[in-house]
Length: 278
Image 1 (cartoon, rainbow, N blue to C red):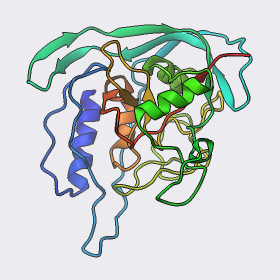
Image 2 (tube, rainbow, N blue to C red):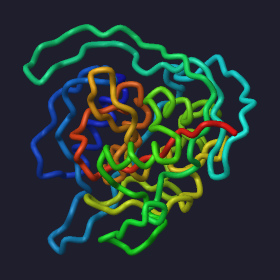
Image 3 (cartoon, helix red, strand yellow):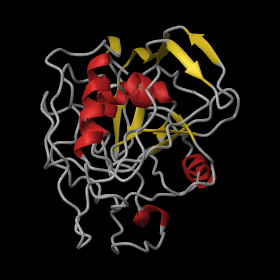
C-alpha cells in the first residue's frame, strides 16, 4: 500500500473509534498472498447501538500506477446480460514483500498479465438467478453470496467460468482513466460501501455511480466476488468490503489488496461469470 494510503488508513482507523486493537503495520503483498489481514474496522457505534457515519476520507491528487494498458478493441458479440471487456496488459501487483503465516518474508516481483477480450456478466449473479432464498431483506435482486463450489458450478452450467483476477481488474480499469468510474472523489451516495458492520449487500444496478464505461455494474463495491483458483488451487476473492469505513482506500490500492485467499466454503462473497462470445 502506498505511503499516502497507509497514512489515510491510519487516520481513518483512529477516527472510527473502533474497539479493536490497532492493526499491524501494513506490508506489500502479492495477489495470492499467504496472509489476509484479519483486523476488522467497524463504524463507530454509540450506546444506543445506532451506527454513525464513517469519517471523511481524502483521496490522492494524482492517479496511482496504471493498472490496464495496451487496449485491444473488442469485436466480440456478447450474450444478453453481458458486456465485452477489451483485452490488454494488466498489472496485478506492483511487487514488494510477502509475509507468510509463519512470519517468513520473500520478495515478489511486479506481475503483468495479458488478457484476451472476453464477455463478463453486467451484474453479480443474483439470488433470483440461482433461485436462492435470502434470509436478509427478501429481494431476488440481491447478489447471491455463496460458496466457491456453488459459484464455480453455476458458471460451468452456463458454459462459462469464473474470471481470473486479471480479467476482473481489466473489467474495472479498461474504460476509466480516473480513480473511480465516476471521477476522483470519494462519495457517500451512489455506491454500496462504507456501510455499518455486517450490512447486507445492495440490489444490483441500484448504485447509480458504480458502473463502468462498458456498462458493468457494482465492481467498485457491493459484494466481494469469487475468482478462479490460483495455480496452487487456492480459492480467491476480489473487491472491497462494503461494511468497512476504509473501503475506498483499499480500492485505490487494488494491486495489493484486491486478491485475498479465503476458505472456499465461505458464503460471504458473490460472483459473476465470464461467458463465451456468440
